[in-house]
Image 1 (cartoon, rainbow, N blue to C red):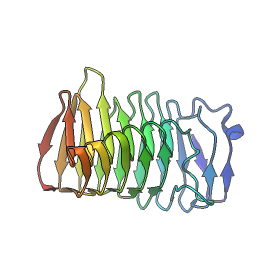
Image 2: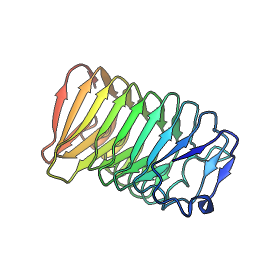
Image 3: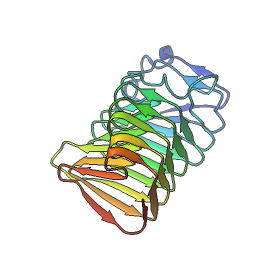
Length: 231
């Protein structure tokens, strides 16, 4: 495992050349003046933890962000091979972009995402998942806000969850808000494939799309809505 302390102000690719089997990387709190760049090959089978007080944004000296793992997928984080991403506390992921999927974060290959509080705002993807894109994994969001993100030519302005396997996945939301997100379809979010979407006490509001401004269900996905607001 690797813990990145508060005192570090920049981490480059060379620091991780031999770290393809890292179990997890922890970016510790108050490290909002640091950034990580060019480490496209270290996130295999890895967990990325962003803890309270970390603010990954694009520009200036606050870049645990756009350059973490490349530009095509995952503007702030790209994780594959069963790696997981956990966002806790007051973490913000702001104004990141990807030319394909996952403006803020992209997870594929069976990894899971867990968000507890925090805010993911003003991120952009040209295809799917303006803020977040998860393929073949599970996602759980508790009291997090996903606001003002854009999937300009695809699905899921706030979140896109795709499952191409024969094993059902879950997307569970309890508390929090999806608002002012935009996409071609599924302005708030889109679940695609064998995914069970479970919503409790969550507000999905003022999102927009050509098709399905709030939620778009595709290819066998299902929705269980317990409480909250969709409008």
